[in-house]
Length: 182
Ligand SMILES: Cc1cc2nc3c(=O)[nH]c(=O)nc-3n(C[C@H](O)[C@H](O)[C@H](O)COP(=O)(O)O)c2cc1C
Image 1 (spheres, helix red, strand yellow):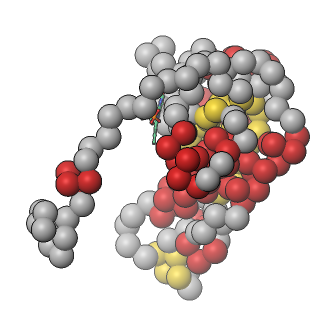
Image 2: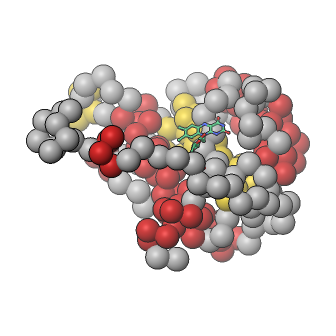
């Protein structure tokens, strides 16, 4: 797919076929995450790839009942947990720079590359951040110092959701000064 087509085609997929994902496709998707830019090239992200059915069910069970992606966690053949080490981002010479959560930005960039690569491979994903982090950490054995930032199912889509409305360029872009539309 052409780059813009990948971006335009991507949707949050919440209904999946159970067909397995060929290893080469999974590897391409993980490779896209691996080569992302990051703070001082520290690459603070770590990914847990879950294929085991009982672990997927355990993850589904700890999503809030109102989270619309819950069922997808059982349908999709793979769940990926995007984790990040806060100590491996936002530092220069061991000095903390500002108070922004740079590791979350790093993980976000890397994981969005994963998401777009999946789209390019004909696979669906859905960013999921509404979950109990403690419960997910317990299930996946994530160490105390590592954060679970986001989850995504990965699999062949079993739905074609319509695109959701986005704000216009005029609503989101200013020129020279914040709030200036020209
Ligand atoms: C940071 C983030 C967290 C999200 N968390 C969830 C979630 O917990 N559950 C869910 O079903 N969708 C979640 N979404 C998906 C958004 O609802 C979705 O991206 C948005 O409605 C636009 O739809 P689209 O992705 O199909 O374009 C999340 C998206 C982002 C970027």
